[in-house]
Length: 93
Image 1 (spheres, rainbow, N blue to C red):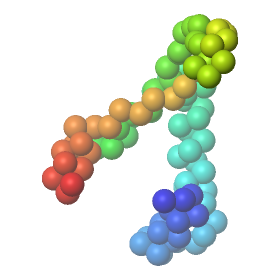
Image 2 (cartoon, rainbow, N blue to C red; image 1 turned 120 degrees about the vertical axis):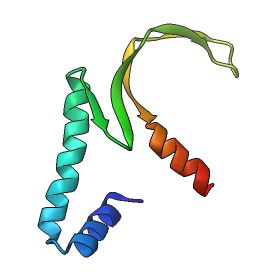
Image 3 (cartoon, helix red, strand yellow; image 1 turned 90 degrees about the vertical axis):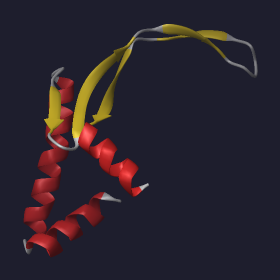
């Protein structure tokens, strides 16, 4: 599902304007990014949580050329689904 599809669905199901739906979607994504940058955590009950995770630097080897190189420390966002979401997915699947 694309961002535009989420906006369209919000508009239809809640009978709100496109600008209002766009603002809601943007606010949600902005909060996920802002909390992650600050090192925080965003919990959405019944859905899951987003958290900032630090990946340590490490050496890797290119399997084709055999050249070893170092990847610097970096950050990524992880998502952990809630037990309710996992249960619902397993029941439908």
